[in-house]
Image (cartoon, rainbow, N blue to C red; front, side, top):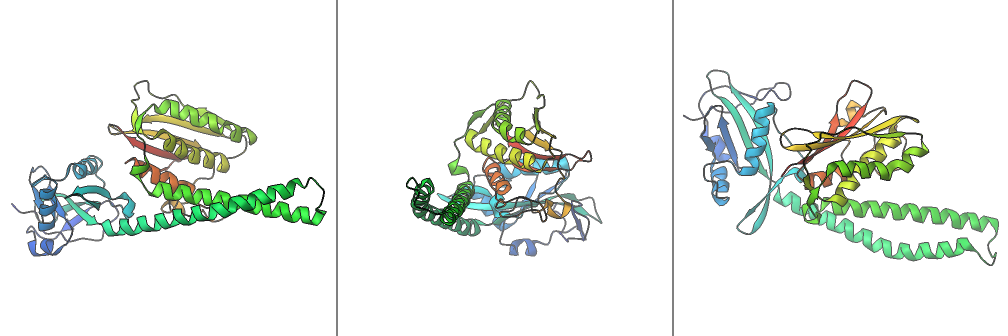
Length: 360
């Protein structure tokens, strides 16, 4: 039996799609250039359009969903929520005939208004060219940053020598000008280092050195590294007890340290003086281990929640002299780990940022 035709209906988010009839309009599906899979509830069959059938055959999964997509679909079924990413960096990598292809999956619930058919639609958008162009931009950013660092190093050396002024050749005004130029050069160097961090993070999984990691030890190390910064503002760093059976995860320890450094630094910066920042590790669900950083700051306004992890984004009206790259870099590192990063909505005047790292 063919699945019903898909006809979107305007409904609140996560309510799925409504079907106006019970027949599947194959001419529409065949015209869609991207792979489309439909999976009906309680039926083992998967319906594929020609693009999906070709992809499944090339991946050795004739008539089935690719394993990576099946895991995503299983999670959507378990939670009842669709999966609708928009950022091409969230695309999944498939290797077909020695070539890399990136597909951005979207999983949407459909329901029939006139018969018993219901289930899920999986659409895979080929974003390989977008990813290639993004990679070209990242390489250019990295090259420019490296080229600027070399002359800046020489300028900094001259300025440091002038600041020493061992022969007292500079008058007061000249000393102030040299000191100002030195501060600006240091700020420029910090900006270039951030841009290099950005280019490394955007380059993704090839940069990772993944080994078994004890997240409890990672949390304790993050608290230790941030202790001095917290003490300056009288902030107490606390580590919540974690489950005894918390397993190790496969991760790049140095990259993970960088993510926690960003999250803890932000929590200290935005939390109140003499407040508390709590770090905890827990079991998110059967597939993920979670690390949370919880502070008592003002939180993230609703208008900024959808943009807080964008590059160069800063919450309007918040103090700070950063570039707005920290959370974006953290996000890129976690995506490279095939994990998740986000904010938990809380009602107890606490702000919780979390990262979920996959098991296995």
